Length: 218
Image 1 (spheres, rainbow, N blue to C red):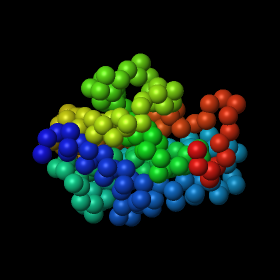
Image 2 (image 1 turned 90 degrees about the vertical axis):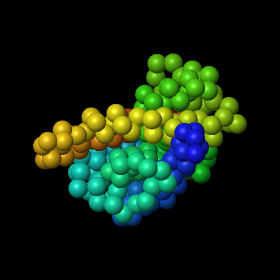
Image 3 (image 1 turned 60 degrees about the vertical axis):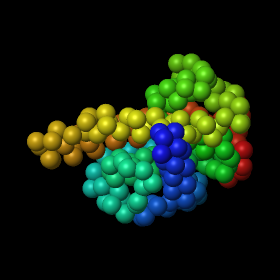
Image 4 (image 1 turned 120 degrees about the horizontal axis):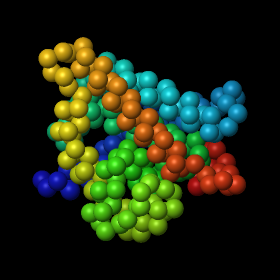
């Protein structure tokens, strides 16, 4: 199977399982609803910030991530803990989209979730297709991607994620010191999770002056 086909399988899996829930994880919709029904938040902005903080702590807890990775079977060969971390981040990005009122079944929303997860890799995936995002991921840039290319974008993002697996694993592992390795791995996952949350916030937050009613379908 070529890298693009494998990337497509990974992208579809992360979206399907991340949004629907896997193992002990509830769905992205249910996660969003936990924050939407909480009257203690003054705004959706505050809800999203609290969500990012909690999911970042979860990603730092290597025992939780590793345990989840032992439960979930991935469609391609990747380290289980890394795949589990991606699922947590995809679910978080989906919940952020939902808090801001977006429809999780919308294909462009699903692509934005993958773009949030991919970070700098997203630019490489766009370049592969001749699409230029500029220096930053923005709603406007992503909204200009032709709808017919969204599936291809998803495949390229998945392929790029797979291509970077080796480098990501090496960053996490001082092999001779297992405890230190766990701390480094957890810290890296937490940093990446926070970046994913910030990217999702950028891609899904309504522009200034525009309000999307929570629970509506944008």
